Image (cartoon, rainbow, N blue to C red):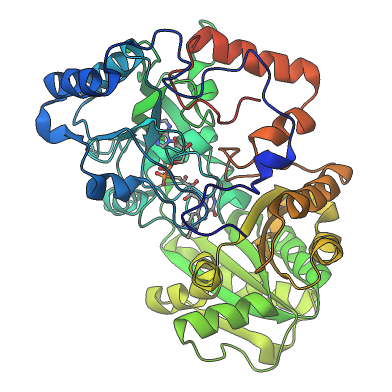
Length: 496
Ligand SMILES: Cc1cc2nc3c(=O)[nH]c(=O)nc-3n(C[C@H](O)[C@H](O)[C@H](O)COP(=O)(O)OP(=O)(O)OC[C@H]3O[C@@H](n4cnc5c(N)ncnc54)[C@H](O)[C@@H]3O)c2cc1C
C-alpha cells in the first residue's frame, strides 16, 4: 500500500493497458494550446479578473482542502481552487482554463470513492459548492431545481417539507452534492426501489469544455428533438461538461418507516428475505443491504456500539420498508411474513420505527466506509454481478484476494437487490494492481460490471476497455472528442 502522500502507484489504472496515443492531454504541458509565457500567472490573473479575487485560491493550505479524498487513497496538487458563485462564473472559469491550456476537474462534496474529483495532475479544481441554491418545490410536477452544489441532506430537508423526497439516498448524504450524484449516476440503498440518479434527472444545465452553457432545464416529459444530452451528461463524471443546475424528479415522502437489522446464516438467506419482501409488498420495499460479521465488528469497534443482536451471525441484512400513514400495519405484517419465510431467528432481529432508532440501525451499515478508512487505506472496488449470482461472490472474492495476499483482510458489503458488492481490502503489503486484477477478472467472468455505482474515475479508467467491447470504446472516445476535443475537462478519467 502506498504511503498517504504518495501517488497511487499501485492503483487499478496501473494494472490496465496504457492510454491510447490519441488520448486527451493530461496536463498543461501537453495541452495543444498551452501558453508559452508563464501560464501559471497569466491563468490566475485571468481567473481573478473573471471571477473576482476571492473566488480564486492558490494558497497551499486552501488547496489542501480539495487535494485529498476521504479514503486517503487519492492525492493531488491542484493548480488553483476556483469557487464560482454562478453558472456564468463557471463558464468564465472553464473558458479561461481552456484558453490557457489548463485542464479542469469539477469537485462537488469530495465524497467520491474513485478519485475522479481529485486534481491528481495539476489541474484547476473547480468547486461547485457555492452553487447551492434551492428553488421552491414544484409540488404539482413533483420536481425541484437546485444548484449543482446543493448537498443531498439539505435537498432532502427542503423537499420533505412539501411531502416529497429525493429518490436516491446514500451514506454520504451529509456531503455529496446533487451535481456530483448526477455526474456519477449515484445509486445507494434505495436503488432497489427507485433506480439510480440518471432516472430522476428531468433536466440540467452544464458548462461545456469551451465555456458555452448547455441548457436543458425545461423539464418537458415528452421531447424527442434529438439525442438525450441530459442522460449523456448524467454519469459522465465531469468529462463532458460541468453540471451547474439540475431539475430533479421527486417521489412522495413515505412517513411510515420500519428498519430491521437481521442476523442470518448466509447470503442465500438474506436473498430469501428480499425475495419474500418483494413477493409480499413490493410497493413498500425501500432498501435491502447486507454486510458480514467482520464488517459489523469493525463498525462497532470504531463507533463504540453495543451488540445490536443476540448471537454471532455471518451475514447481517438491513432492510427498510416505507409507506403512507395508513399502511403502518402493512409494513409490520410484510416484515413479519418475510422474516418467517426466510427462516430468520426471532432472537436475531432488531426492528425500529422511530427516526433516531432507525438511523442507529442503519449506522451498522452506513458507518462502514468511515470505520474502514480509520483502519487504513483500502483497495476499494465497487462491482456488480447479475443479482442471481450475488450469493457466491463475497466468498469467491475473499479467496481470490487471499491467493494474491494471504495476510489481507477482505470486507464485503453492499446492496442485495442490485447484485452490488463493495469490496474493501486492507493490507500492509497490498499489491493493488494484482489485487484489483484478481477481483475484477472474477467479476467479469461472472458477467458483472467493474464499476457499479461509484463510477470509473481515475481508479478504474484502465478497466473500461476491458469491460466494454471495442465498438463501445470507440463510441465513448468519439463522444469525448466531439464535446471536449482539447481534453480540458477531467482528462485521464473515465474515457480509456
Ligand atoms: C459514506 C459514503 C457512502 C457512500 N455511499 C454511496 C452509495 O451507496 N452509492 C453511491 O452511488 N455512492 C456512494 N458514495 C460515493 C459518493 O458519495 C457519490 O459518488 C457521490 O455521488 C459523489 O458526490 P460528490 O458531490 O461528493 O462528488 P465528488 O466526490 O466531488 O465528485 C465525484 C465525481 O463527479 C464529478 N463531479 C462532481 N460534481 C460535478 C459537477 N457539478 N459537474 C460535473 N462533474 C462533477 C467529479 O469530477 C468526480 O468525477 C458514498 C460515499 C461515502 C463517503
